[in-house]
Amino acid sequence: MLFNYLIGQIRLLIIDIARGTNIRKQLSYLRREQYFSSTEIKNIQKNKIKKIFSLAQKNTDYYKYFKTYEELPILTKDLVRKNEEGLKNKLFKRKLFKKGTSGSTGTPLVYYTTQLAQSFMWAGILLSWEVTKFVIGERVAFISGSAIIKSSTQHNIFYKLLNIKCYSTFTLNDENIEHYIDDIKRRKTKLIYGYATALDKMATYINNKIPETKFPHLKGIVSSAEVLTEENRKNIETAFKTNVYNQYGCNEAGISAFECEYKKMHLISTRSWYETDEENNLISTDLANEGFIMMRYFTGDKVLFSKENTCKCKRNYPIIDNVIGRSYDFVVDMNKKILHAAFFNILFRNDPTVKQFQVKFNKNSIKICLNVDNTKSLCEYDIYLNAIKKHLHFEHYEMIFNTPFLTAENAKHRYVIDETNVVC
Image 1 (cartoon, helix red, strand yellow):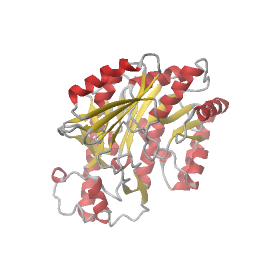
Image 2 (cartoon, rainbow, N blue to C red):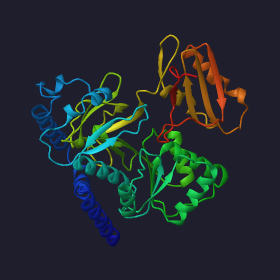
Image 3 (cartoon, rainbow, N blue to C red):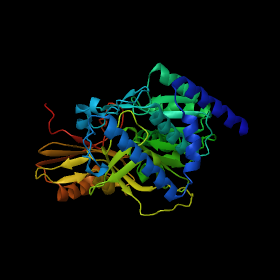
Image 4 (cartoon, helix red, strand yellow):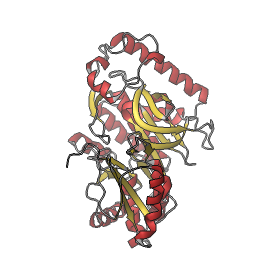
């Protein structure tokens, strides 16, 4: 065990030297900080936001006229695009790294980050993996699209040093799933990290076709980049015969959260100064990015925070009750009534025959696309259409079964697709 730990430290050291990061130092610090008192954590957070606001006020064109943090406007993606130069710290002399969001909402956002922010991001991810008793350097499988897997030479070296093998979700058919399963077992993979929907699809294949499959070396699975429903979790845990933990992040906003051993999601709050509005939209400032300062950034995520202050795991980071989803996951009917995708999650969650859904709508019509297991007649699903009609008004309603879902460019599953402005 000690030998594996030392090898892992050497791997991280090589990565830090090659990339100019300090992941090893940040991870070591977070391992201790997570058990600080809530008062200590809050004081660290307060000192960091004071520093960030002062830097922004003195050294950026965008923030120089604001006197207090509270008077700052909400920073949207459009404002970031229009004020790219104005958000840069003119006295920041270190290298800025150009990054982009995954583009799930449509047009990806280009922003800049720093070595410290990147170090914090990866330290947070590794901390989430360690909940499974994973040791850095053990074999990892990435099952995802471009939101997690990057294809540059630099990233490929990074993956090799962390003993990560990538499995693309862009063509996740039965043949590839079977190959991925065989390879994961052959490599004696210790940890799987990936999209919830991709993991769920693989799990469904295992449970339906090869339920006797065992993964004796697997310590756990961490799901990221998509909403993990309890139905997803149960399906994945049944197939892979191990615990599934949720991990949530929004790097441009400094958001990094992970589930502990008791399945409570803890936000690493010393990297972000966060708030939620009356509609539970998460707004945050990255406290580790002093080069490209984005304060009160509108993440596009809806998050519910817990009123609980303590957890059996003894970590004192704030607890997130639920990551509801993206704020763009809404259906708007002919009367301008708005319904969140969470409605459909609730509608289908007690029906084990419904494996996944996707909703497409335009001004006049709505289509409910369901992936079902064919154990009951299709007419039995009419009860859902009738329930939807009680809440949403359209001229045309349609239910479609077992057709391929549309995905985002990064291979993420899209729960709601607004076709209002699509030209046929």
